Image (cartoon, rainbow, N blue to C red; front, side, top):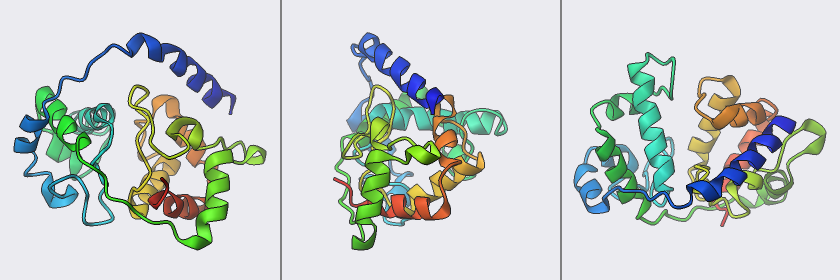
Amino acid sequence: MKKIALTITMLLGALSANNAVAFDGNAEAGKAKSATCAACHGPDGNAPVAMYPKIAGQHADYIYKQLKELKLGMTSGGKEGRMDPVMSGMAMPLSDQDMKDLAAYFSSQNMSAGSTPEEVVEIGQKLYKAGDAERGIPACSACHGPRGNGTSLAKFPKISFQHPDYIKSQLLKFREGTRANDMNGMMRDIAKKLTDKDIEVLSKYLGGLH
């Protein structure tokens, strides 16, 4: 818990220094390059299949970071970055400018709204906004914001309206350690403390968070 709190404090202190850095991707160029992405993520980044993430409206910096790390996962044989059997292969031929352009395009689109089942609203809201101090689980909102919009500069992703199936799969990967491209292991440390029920509830709660 102390490690997570210290990381957040240091990160927020450094944000002002990075605030002037501009993202130089070209959305129009990204749209022209996005045809291959549409098969899984949809033409505008709203994935029609729940196992794939919605990337419409996601922070450009975050999309760019993930593409770079997915490519690194392939080139390093899974020793570095983020390894995914499908996406790492898709990222391999992309140049740095391709990644920036794609990130700019998808971030400029609007993410489609989702919904939250009534039965998980109360428990999901409590876990998301307050965490569980007894188990050392910090509030998700501390990094992802009260509405799940994340922050571009800190590269914390927007997680509201995301497909519950995708959120669940990523939390499980963080818990198992099969996804390890989170800053300072923050998500892995948190996910290890989440039960299957916690993950199920949070995944469904985030689907309609706004």
